[in-house]
Amino acid sequence: AWDFVRQNWGSIKITFVGRGLGQVIMRVTSDFNLEAERQDVVSFFKRVGIPVGAEAALQESLARIEANVSWLERNRALLETPYSPNQEN
Image (tube, rainbow, N blue to C red):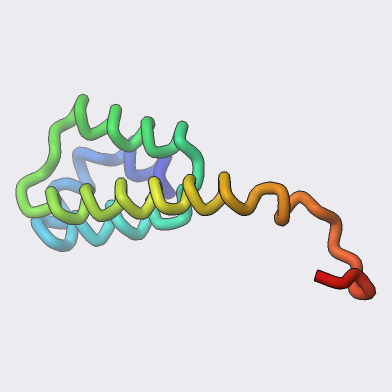
């Protein structure tokens, strides 16, 4: 979805105005959990500019990505541990 948004930004910017555009940004970035993805979002909006009415949504999206990155870093070892139904916690 993010690739589509980047490739079609001109049309999307016209179709979705203000808060609607903010919702698009939030939805397509909500599952991002890598620092590289956050940097990609930052770089994209530095290049194209932050749309009027979407500033808060972009900041919220970046904060969510940062939280996701932190969560993944804290829990990576647990997630990489093979699951065994007989394993005690």
